[in-house]
Length: 288
Image (cartoon, rainbow, N blue to C red; front, side, top):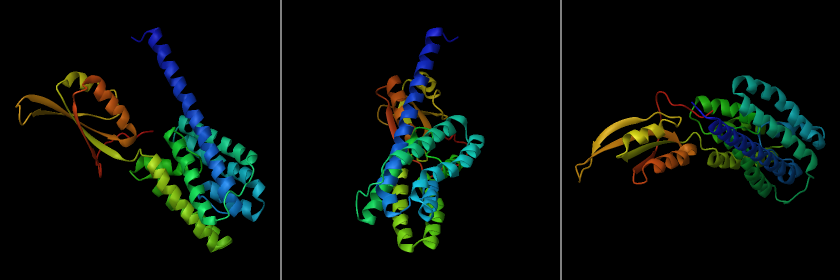
């Protein structure tokens, strides 16, 4: 039965984690708004997604309305995501959308570079940083990220690839409604963004870990506290002919640090072999 001290400790840890996630989300919103106002909007370029759709409408009407349009488009998606995904995810996403809207309104529009190619590349990198960090914090930057998160929860597809496909629709719209030069610059930005997001958001990358240890029961007890199952194989050393236990588990690259810490806390002398997994068939618990 948990004691009052352990309960308070757990509450403090959860509160600290929530504050950290919220701070990362606000910082992510700052990156998204900075990439838009300093690099893309001055050249009337797009980053794709809802921000891109809002930018198209803003370029056709008045760029000062982009922040309001961005919020208006995101609102129904957030409501739908609240039903389909979960409270924490949508709560952080709403914080990111609200923060991005506010930052877009207060950050002055400055043309950092006169070269639209450089603006596309660096704007894409900065915005991708915002998108990726918000995803790692457990939320999203809203819009297409929510749709992409739903897809990647059900399929082992890289988030960046999903966003690249959906962003293509927005880019084509820009090409038909404005100019194909702008659309091609925007495509460069979207491509860069998708690559960087894939580097940051690594929950889709699966790893198979083989752990050889003599502390079978203690290791099993510790690994069973992690989200994924463990398979036990009795082994024998080829040189020493001593009996050992090999534990096999599949995790994600995102969770690897936690698994490594768990193994080392039980048996610092354990032999661990980590392999990247190409495909998984059957049950595998994906991160929420």
